[in-house]
Length: 101
Image (tube, rainbow, N blue to C red; front, side, top):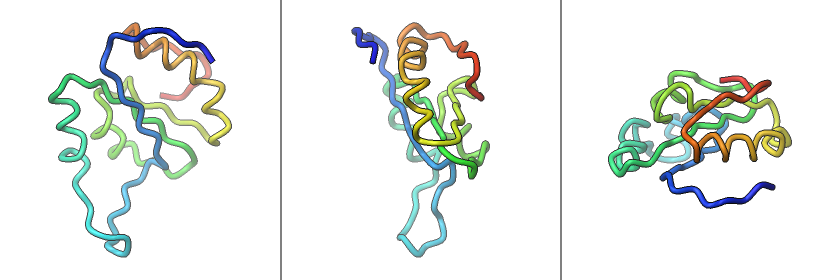
């Protein structure tokens, strides 16, 4: 893994891409309300969805912008993108070949 100092405020949210709102697990917080405090503090939020259930609307609400959404089919795929995503987040760019946005 590539390590370096990043001066940007960045959060990586790894999710299945769907908010649980059925009430069986408990009450839920609307995604916009959940992510806004971090955004207000200048934190750039990247939403990384693992699996095939991704709800793009939910991910767009969570992420700082649509360019910060990544879809991967399996958890193992995170190892293939981790270094590149880390560099992109710290440099404020995003151009990763082979990664769905």
